[in-house]
Length: 281
Image (cartoon, rainbow, N blue to C red; front, top):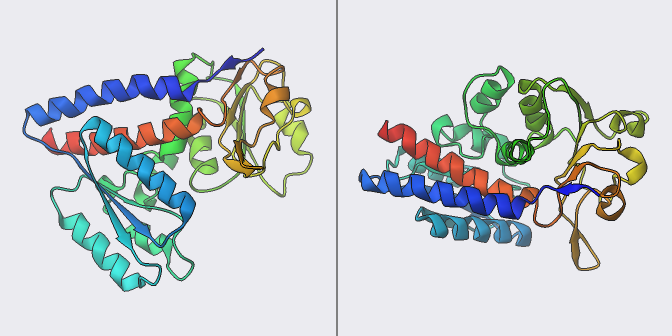
């Protein structure tokens, strides 16, 4: 049976360490501020934003959620981002995605100054990741790497396969794994014979958005399987991996819930704290 990559337990440990860093900043007179912009009333986004608010409260970070109506214009959204960029009390700015369809999220994200881009989505931070420079890494990929390292999963020289090519998870996690000297393959909806690729993987990251998509016959025995999926099936949250069958084949596996999702929030908090620490240094 696979070793469980327990994101809940790891995030609790890391949050305790982050609290110490927040306290150290406060001792120097520095308070930390995160501003989250939520446009419209997407139920999933509301849940994510509430969870971010709870994490801020637990650490002693000032978390401001700015709620904007569905009909907010591009100009209004951009004016708010510019205002927050200029606010010295704001260390991190996060625009909750997805935005309503009439808004241009690429333009909005590019407006956030890179040092306050705690989601790691700004083109400058994405470029730094691509070129191996120090910058802000996207929270979910950063959390995946932290999990693998916490359980001492071998990375250097290993075959890594990422299913999914999104700018939020697939591409950045591939780059992080490449920077750890993995040999990386990115698979997607047009990949021919997907299972032939996944069966070679020592590390398999599933970020495809289809419930229980990865089955035991697609997994190399002993592989580390990281499940990024969050799908609702019959009122239950399940991942992109068929946990019950894959657990018997894999060497390591992350559960859903209690895996990557917990780490994403934790890494967001770390990005905010790092932004604040750079101001003090």
